[in-house]
Length: 361
Image (cartoon, rainbow, N blue to C red; front, side, top):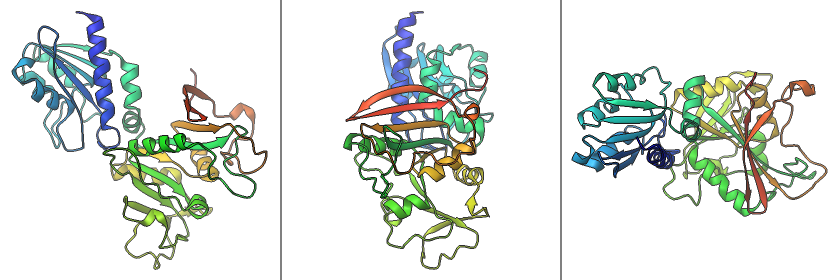
């Protein structure tokens, strides 16, 4: 087989999968390219929304009879179960596909086994092509399946000396307009955007996506244990759905019609993993944490940050709150070490993306 042709087709499938970011939960993002027996691309598809046809089905429909004897390139092992849609492994067999190349094995115990089904039907199967690229593009869903909780991306903007606000509390705007626009892309990719009470009171954030075409609005999760939010808060408008998380005994009579999640408090705080468990149960697979230093510290302390995206502005303040408050780290040997996976210039800022270092790596 022509390995370069395989790589080109799979890379295209990875690009297609990214089109579904933010719109497919609780399902993964998946891309598929179908070539005919001669290697010519005859069909492309991606999973567009939960409950709708999977990527393979879209690509097979586009290919029609030209799929017979051809190859399907899929970013995730074709599913082997019947849910709201039928098993993709069977769809590929019925279409006459002769060869399937997939990037990442499906870790979902309900859906795995597609490769074995294909092989049993006489289909040639190859696994692991561009696995790292496909894994990176589907990291939120894969993390959620493996951990049983939503993937958490912590985003913050700070000066070069790590301040997220000045000594007087002013923070608009530390980052550039380009960085703020980039944050809307992150919101569009997330199932939920989460902030805490300090951010709600200081910034009155809106949290909805703006400037991203065809974006599915994420759930706005406002963590306000004592329900001090005013009915006029921007996060309560109808631009996107909102979930207000409060303590069990919080008085919410001034917030009629607001969807509430009441959770027990420990030392005045909601448990990080208890909150994430509730979000996971309602189909949330990725959370963009936009809260302030205190909330970020709680998530870091709880081992619940899977990725950090920091926008560093070329400015110095010398005083004011740091990006991260107490995270239970008292000595350098206990520091949460990170691997930088990407750096980029965004406007006048530098965006750094990093993930916790694997222990023992």
